[in-house]
Length: 330
Image (cartoon, rainbow, N blue to C red; front, side, top):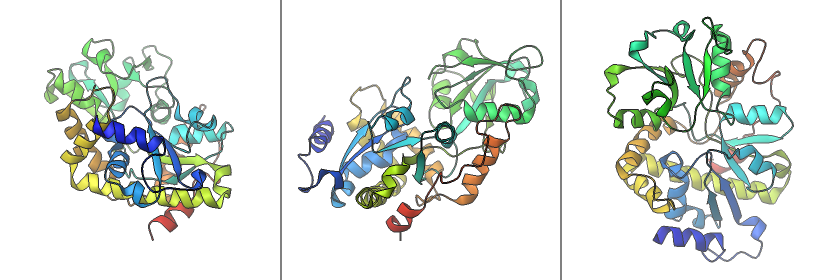
């Protein structure tokens, strides 16, 4: 609760160094999902004063099951958002000029978790099966993967039946789906917590299937990057955020505790958040916040390889910049 009061004070401009120009100091970050260790680096930066050291008052807005971060950014509800690259690039191609300014996550935690007794051993075995898939932009990596594998997603014995999965593991536990979407750091643990043993499951990690796409990048509107004041603010924001991420990697239990302090819902459990932070650290390891052009191109190639229904239809131009990280990290 103490941390929540601090966050409210910062949001109201009552904490941190006095700034004559709010435009130069106020930052609103919109998360991809609810408050949890997936976003520990930002909460650590807030809690440990890293943002304050950079002269910033940062407000962190949680996401949710019916919230699309690109829409929030487009509507002016945030300065920057966290978003998976497939969702952001799809939004950009549809006319929303979002640009990746930093990439704290180096690898993907997305995978499918399946019942072993369904006989699923390979991607070809998905045919005739029901697979739970998240939407709101999260479906793009899956649809691209199935297209590359030659698995139609319109059902039938020769295709995959796509179940619009809620953000829980119930479809698997209730046998409504043969496989569901899970993150290594979240839903997979929920399945195990429900009493299912790992021996009963088969998993397909997107990284191992060669179809992984970048997740949880920091995105801003292109027009704002023409504003030197905004650019300077983002340089300071990214520098402090990455300091928070490296602190979280080195202190996972303490980082999870900080996240819990900022969880206004009280819905998160300590053990689950500590476990999540341990898994998240594996995904941010090796990243200094800058986007590796090879990782970007791998993501784009995966999305373009969607056959007759690709996620994007052309190589994105201007979809990322190193201007912020070049200044923040050097």
